[in-house]
Amino acid sequence: MAHRTTAPPAVDRAAGAGERLPAAVLWDMDGTLVDTEPFWIAEEHDLVESYGGRWTDELAHECVGNPLLVSAQIIRDNSPVTLEPHEIVERLLGGVVRRMREHVPWRPGAQDLLKALAAQDVPCALVTMSYASFAQVLIDAVPGGTFVEVITGDSVTHGKPHPEPYLAAAAALGVQPADCVAIEDSPPGVRSAVAAGVPTLAVPHVVEIPAMEGAVQIDTLAGLTPSDLVRLSLAR
Image: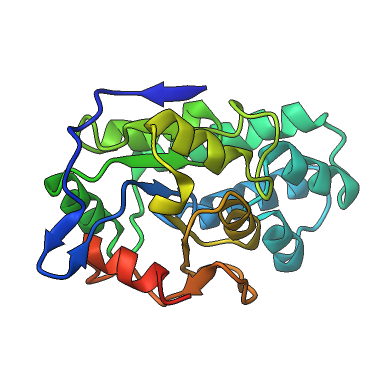
């Protein structure tokens, strides 16, 4: 489902002399805002090993950025785990939620950039293939209204790399995809945002991201300002 809070007022997209702000920033969550990929990988290892199997980093990285049911099927196809895909998702999700409630592992620069966007009234949406129950953990950890919209993997018909999640976020915010900036850390996520027509910043983390037209790769969010997002995304 799309989760809505009170939208911030419309703002002049000129941040200052010669500076522009995005109409909205559409954020991936796992690996982009928070470094939860190690949580998922650890839970995958625990699950597979509990069935007497062995889980490799290569297989774990194959799961990064996918809809959860797709990752669950990868686990079923490559391990002795006999649970149904939805049962695998429930098992992994429970463990990751528990870890996240104990500690929110922010990615460098992400929390500061969220605060800067809020200070300049730039609306943000969370666009994640994790389920609403997990996204809520992050929502609970930030000031109210940080995310005006939340699109989760259990709210869309087609997950990333399909464009639906990002199209849904832009539509929910009432903005054009081309006027937004998406921030992603995985190939499926970048493909999703680019296919939706959203200028995209790719910040590789656990897996490499191939060069894609419509996306610009950067090393980190640390030190970036809201107007930097437009400047960098237009460099593609």
